[in-house]
Amino acid sequence: MFITLDLESEEPIYTQLMHQIIEGIAKKELKPGEALPSVRSLAADLGINLHTVNKAYQQLKQEGFILIHRQKGVVINPDGVAKADETYWPQLAAKLRPLIAEAICREVSMNDFLQACQEIYSEFNPRSEPK
Amino acid sequence: MFITLDLESEEPIYTQLMHQIIEGIAKKELKPGEALPSVRSLAADLGINLHTVNKAYQQLKQEGFILIHRQKGVVINPDGVAKADETYWPQLAAKLRPLIAEAICREVSMNDFLQACQEIYSEFNPRSEPK
DNA sequence: TACCTGTTATACTATATATATAACAGGTAA
DNA sequence: TTACCTGTTATATATATAGTATAACAGGTA
Image (tube, rainbow over all chains, first blue to last red; front, side, top):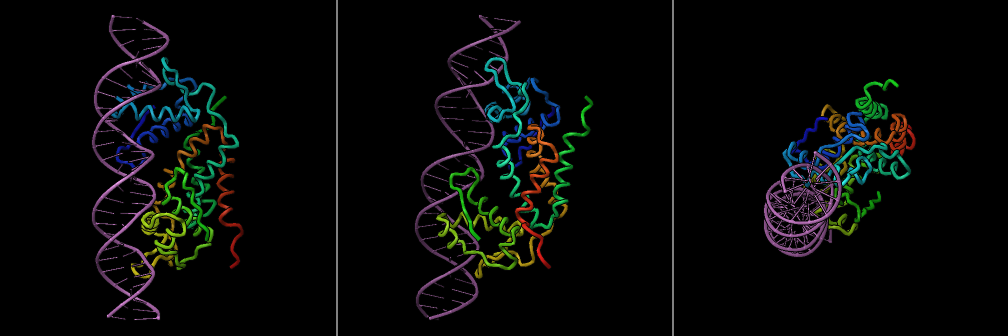
């Protein structure tokens, strides 16, 4: 699991970290129960402060992606991430709406937009897993 | 064109303003060449500072949604918003990727995700325009 | 005992957001 | 000309967020 940060980006470091870990879970590179580096070692590896890593971990914990055991360390949620529930969909819609509004302004057809989503979705599921 | 702000939201006021104006354009409630309120009057109507409105206007101008004439005022870009070009798609993908990664973690199928997009897209185009 | 966890506390810097006032420059209308 | 409307610029202030730096604490393990 490689993590690359863009320190010049407007996106805060801790959210970059969150996104990369979530993407790692989506790609199955990070599996349920798998251990993550300690806040200190990850911070050292990335050349950032341990509080920045901690902030990302805390938020991932609150959203159910990881579990934090005070003395054992951090692991990907062994029970898997909570499935989409009734609170998830409005939040997703709120994030999608500005993107879709701009797309319409720029004369992007619905099909072109859906295809863009589809291609990204496929990046995470390169092939369906053999059972 | 009604504008509603949530002053308690984590989303900055000026981005809320930008999004609502972009949505207004997408819904054709705001048409090319149409005038927008002056920074002072809109700020007064919304009960916010004129600099906050100005910041939203400046950014909308830079992204090509509106034109600002120093003494005439602000209008929706009469030439329409610039169509999606080769710089647009990577930017869209960068914004979609975290949403799609989380959706996959929450076991949202591709079809369910695409359908959510489709429904929002349809909100902006309630019916195809008669020519 | 030494070392590893996460956690908490404090302090500091820098930047972003939002407000408040004031003034400036150019155009328009009474 | 005068008054008023534009957007623009300049200062100043308050608050919150982001990030870093150090230090210490508490619990578990080798």
